[in-house]
Length: 148
Image (cartoon, rainbow, N blue to C red; front, side):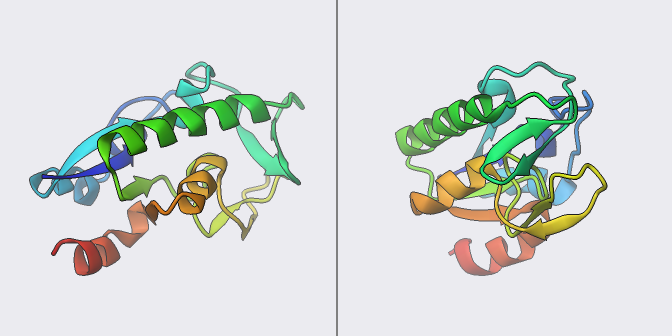
């Protein structure tokens, strides 16, 4: 069975910054075709749940209290990448807009819910290492292109 890394919050694990989850039935249903390996790079990088929200500002990740949490994000991304490589994962389904997992569009660092082009720390590391990243909004594309 193929394996895919999945943002744990999309599978119902309460690990988001606000202490909640964002379960998505289409993501959970992928367990019929994939072994789903849950990850939360922010927690794996040593951050608590709940935690102060953070956004990418320049090349740093800063939380709303002004604390630089870049190293936590980098460490969590590296742990997630190691897990992907150990398990031979070629695909990841990650939480859209997240400073860790967002792909294509992320919050702009102003904490005003304004989006900008960019990738979260973990998503970027995955893409740089040839792991195909989808968000929960792109499950149709995963099914069309990678279910063969």
